[in-house]
Image (cartoon, rainbow, N blue to C red):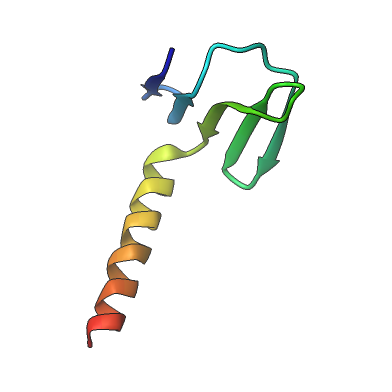
Length: 69
């Protein structure tokens, strides 16, 4: 089961890759990835999602403009 959910109250984007049991998670900045005991990704959480997406898109657009110039 794959799902994408956004909670505007907490500003968290959840991307579910499977419904397998979660064994542990790793956090890097605004991103938390939840894994099974076999190291398969199950769930991706993006904290402060609006800002993360805007900053990511801005970086992509700026990089593309630099390449084309």
